[in-house]
Image (cartoon, rainbow, N blue to C red; front, side, top):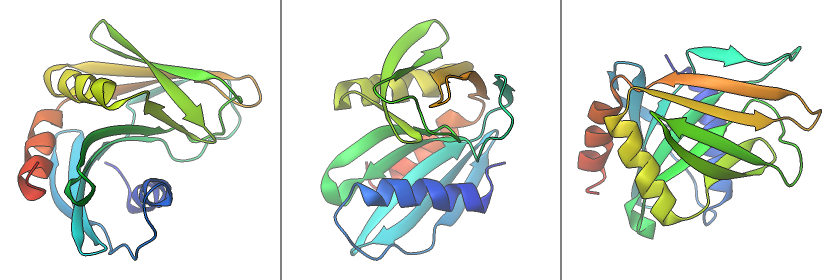
Length: 170
């Protein structure tokens, strides 16, 4: 299960890229398999997201922070399906990360400890692949040159997505 500390960290990163506003405490809507659906209020608008932690980590690292993947809807800003991945380490500068979902591959751009889809079209494709897939892996390289590969179960992703979409009217 995704713990509250890692979700708050993820939300802080998401909020850093939006207009400054006081964000309410995230509230769990429901857990669906390996995914959880949440919402919070920000600047008078709801923000909904689904989150998961990896089932398996590969890489020769000594320490690593919390790791999780998010899909976020911000109807007040007209955005939906925003994919983000918190790696638990700082990425190598100017490096990409890769995501593979049941044979479909996508390139993610990185900054600090986060990776995102390159555009809204890829956000939509990744969200659809997550909802219909069974497994997802995300690979990247840390600022120290350590290669990592995280494997996520997609069990429950469809239910979590439906719930955040219903909650945020997306």
